[in-house]
Image (cartoon, rainbow, N blue to C red; front, side, top):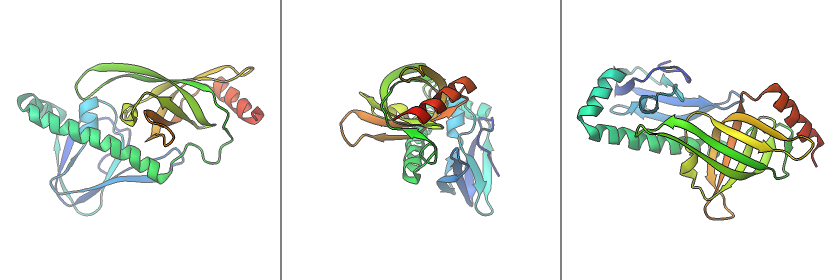
Length: 229
């Protein structure tokens, strides 16, 4: 194993010879292959640019020769040659989009066997401040309507935003307004699926897996799902 998902580190790796496989896992533990890379290709740019933990695991498919470029040395290269940074940013954005598409193709819906509720509830989705490839700290919030609510995740329909808006690493904050007597639930989440809604323009479907929901809110959600129509 060259890199494990959630490892810390900001090095970039260049493949001189051989072949490597990039993969992640959904919340059921099922493996999802993201890419197979060969000679002259590189990986690790997401953590280099954002400072976030590794977003996927990397393992060698066969005997490979790989060069590790440290964060310090790459930072100097980027400083002296701005076009290098532009290339890294372009690959970063392309791979984020590809990952979202792979998840959608794989059908990694949150909790397929969960209790679920199709009744619509209001949802506020907050993309937390983060370091972007351009170094800016940004935060944004969107109001949406649930399409599918489950014990482990939620699908939200958001108007006025393109799918690219939600191709983010890291966590988002959810404020789910359940009807009385259940009330509001607040939790962090990880975006797992993003796609354009087929029924209308400028509308995006965002699939989010809950992360670290408080037990009191989890109980509230279970009761809502059990008692919903």
